[in-house]
Image 1 (tube, helix red, strand yellow):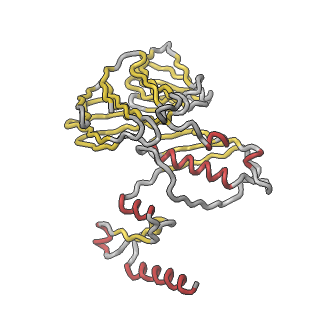
Image 2 (cartoon, helix red, strand yellow; image 1 turned 90 degrees about the horizontal axis):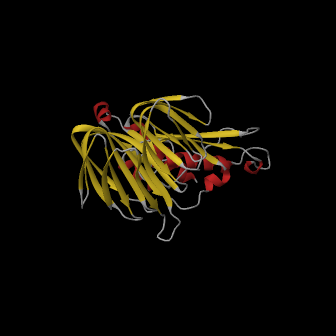
Image 3 (cartoon, rainbow, N blue to C red; image 1 turned 120 degrees about the horizontal axis):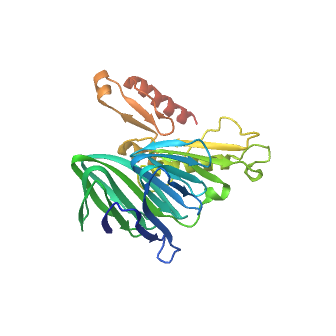
Length: 335
């Protein structure tokens, strides 16, 4: 793992070529800082690149695909996908991560006080991380190196494919960090083949859209369930990935409430739901029911069952939960 610290300077701060495999086609990842004044107009998206931004100081306004202007302040992050056109104006310092097609990234703001341990590295391809100090100061420690980062500085990490490391990020007095995380993906994307586009994303959130064409329809004239499921899977996968690391679907379930008839455009939104490690392991192992007993349950003499498919069933008396289990057992015995 390579660790480099740099000061904020205008222009190209750091640039690397990333690969998914040793002999794979490289893609360029650039970290760039631009000082804007009232006459500056920055344009992005004209080269099929995805660009993530964070405004370090000042104020700015961006317009994406000629839509309504959006105002941003220092510390705000925003992005431009490879098929968007964006213009940014303002007065301040803009930090941008420019990713050629084939690189996927996420950006997170981390309020830090104390010690945060992180596992870094990806199995898919080479990965890169940038820790930007917005205020305060923090320290990054790996097995080989330690770097102190203050306001106006950034620390870059680069890891080879299947190189996994543990790092510690700490701050005694407190710091606000913006973390960019990028990985070189394989040169294949089924969702893009059928036309799914990322519209919005943030920490634990993603919204995708798709123009409906003839090839998305089934013979009865409605949008094919597989196309809808692909949108849901893409949105949920990206939403989960924004919380850290690349995610893949282990188990999935969908209910179609209505047929998508006579539609020209569909969107799908997903929000990542935080669950505990034991619950997550139980869902992966397909445990039908799990009992959660929290402080409130202890006080009230209740339990909070969780069904693998239906989720949290709410607080109830243990006797009521026992009746549910008995009904399930009796139903299976009759079959």
